[in-house]
Amino acid sequence: MNEKVELFFDLFDEAALLHYKHLGLRYLDALFKVGEGVLTGNIDSRLPDEAVEKLETIYGDFEGSVFYNEEVRLALELLIVKAFKDQNLPLDLMTPDTINYLFSKIITTLFPTRAISILDTALGTGNMLTTIHNNFLNHSTLIGIEKDETLVRLAQMGASLQASELLIYCQDALQTLYEEVDIIIGDLDAYYLKEGLDLEEPYLEGVRYFPYLVILKRIANLKAGGYFIYLVNNDFFSQPKSEIFKAYLEKEAMLSGLIVLPKTIFQEGHPGRSIIIGKKTRGVVRDISILEIPSFEKESLKRSFEKLEIMIENIAEEKKC
Image 1 (cartoon, helix red, strand yellow):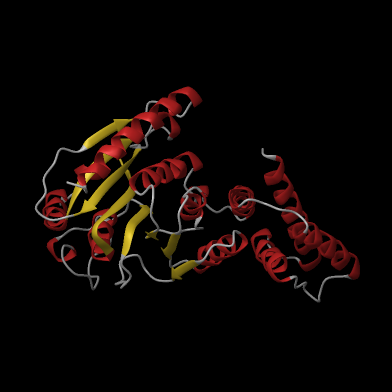
Image 2 (cartoon, rainbow, N blue to C red; image 1 turned 180 degrees about the vertical axis):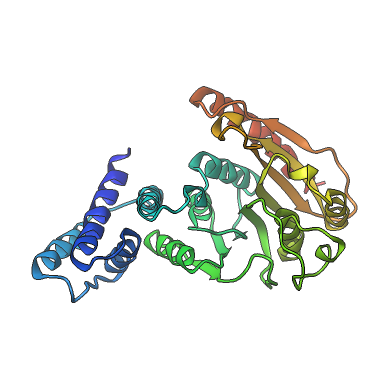
C-alpha cells in the first residue's frame, strides 16, 4: 500500500473508531462523522474530552498533510469496504479498480485534449467516476444518478474530500433527466423489471432487462457524437427481446467496441463481464472492434492496455471522418 494511502486510512480509521467506541455508532455512520470533521473541523459535542483531544490532533494531522486525490480515493475505498463488511453489505457495490482504470484509459484516449462532461447512471459510492476524474488530465464535469441515500452520502463525501464537484440526482436510473453530456458510464446490474410499471417503449413491447432499458433511456442525455461505456454481463446480447433492443439502439446509436474481461476474476458459474462502447450517431453501420483481455496479471494487462489504446484511437478517428 502507498505510504500516503496508508496514512490517510489510519488517521480516518482511528477517528472513526473513536465515534464507534464512545457514541455506539455503526462504523459506516462513524465514517460520515469523520468526513464532516475533516472537511469542517466540527466535533460531536457528545464525545468525552479525551476523544475530543484525540480528534483535534487527528484533524490537525489531516490539515498538515498533503494528499493527492487518487490517494484519498484509494484510502476511502478501503474504509468503505471495512464499513460494508461491518454491516454485511455486498462488496460488489464497488467496481474493482482494474476495471475502473480500464474505463479511465478508454475515456482519456477518446478525449485527450479537451474538457468533458460525464454522467454515471449507476453512481453507487462514486468510486468509478472519481477514478476517471483523478486520471483525466483536463477538466471534467461530474454528474451521477443514484437512488440509495446512503450511497449518495458516500459519493458526496468522497467527492468533497477529493475537492471535486459532483452533481448527484437522487432518483431511479430510468427516470427522465435533462442533462446533456459527452460520456455516459455505468456498471449495470443484470436483472428484470416487474410487470405493470409506468414506463415508455420498449418496456411496452415486452423488454424487461434493466441494462437494455437504461442504455436506451440515457441516449437522450448524450450530445451528438457522444459515447456510452457500460460494464455488462457477457450474456448481454442473448437476453429476451434483444432484437427489440438492437432495433431501437440502431435508430440513435452504434456499438463501436467490446472488451471482454478475464473469466478468472469472476466466481464459478458467473457469465463473466465485458465493457461495451457505443456512440450516439444516426445512419452509421460499422463492424464492432473486439478485444479479449486474457488475464489481469501485470505483464498480460500491460499488453492489453497497449492493444486497448490502439483500439480506442481507431474508434476515436471515426468521429473525424
